Amino acid sequence: MSEMLEFLSKFTEGLPAEAARGEDALWEYLTRRGAGIVNCHAGTFFEADDLKKRLTFRKSIGPVGGDLVGVSFGYQGVVGFCAESRKALLINDAENSPLFTKKVDKGSGFQTKTVIAVPAIANGELLGIMEYINSIAGAFSDEQLKAADLITALVAREVYIKKLEATIKQLNLKGESTINNLSGGFIGSDMEGRVLFFNPKASEIFEVGQEFLNKQVADLMQLCPDIVTAITDVLKQGKTVRRMDFKCSVKGKEKIIGYSSINIKGVDGKVIGAGIIFQDITGL
Image 1 (tube, one colour):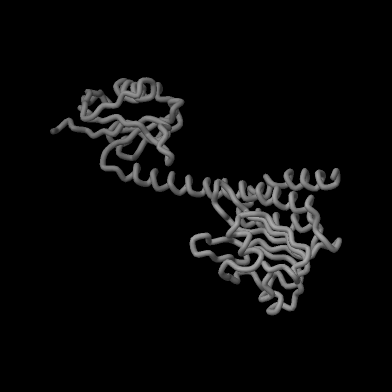
Image 2: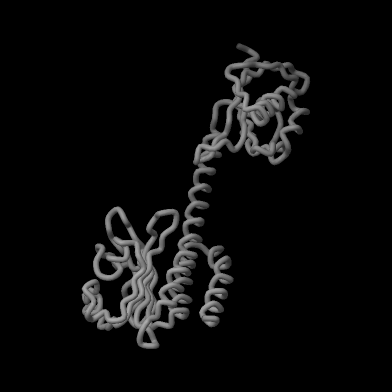
């Protein structure tokens, strides 16, 4: 038991470095290091498409592993049952198991004798199935099944986080592009009052560059006190306004600014900041 704990501890210690390299590296790590932890001859990670009920060889090590990467098939056999049931499986007599299908063995010349299959699940989403084949000791133990289940869950969580980070990055880029292309000015801050958005139109209206980005909202006082008031009212009181205006001196010229203030919400609907959308309506 102490030896297994040491294996698991080292596996966990190595996770951050693999996570930094990305999703592909994490599945590779699970397949290779996991095979050493459960002490087996071969290992395969199958990526799951739960809507289409299909599995694809994503990572594979062993005598015929490299030849199978990229091959897809419908849910069947041990891994198919694991995907359907979302339960970890230990089979020490594959030849006589009703769950085992010999299709892959016949096509590859490989003989499967013992199997551990565990679902990679994060936040309720089935990401894939991790399968370890042919125990070097002759049979897999319950302890090895639990270890496989644990390391697969750890990696699934890391992969899910990477997917979330990629999605948020895409949304941020899309949002930033939209904000930068607005016909009006936009200044926005996070809940701590740090200026995150100061679009090109805002720079044009106030005749400044991007020097206020990442500064505090209070620093906008030198630009125009009413901007600070409008954003602060949203941040501290949740008070938003529509179609108001204020006067502002911009490099000796008096401008009339029409504006609305808003809450900025994240993808989950929670308020994450405040913003002001405005236009120069001096000549109107």
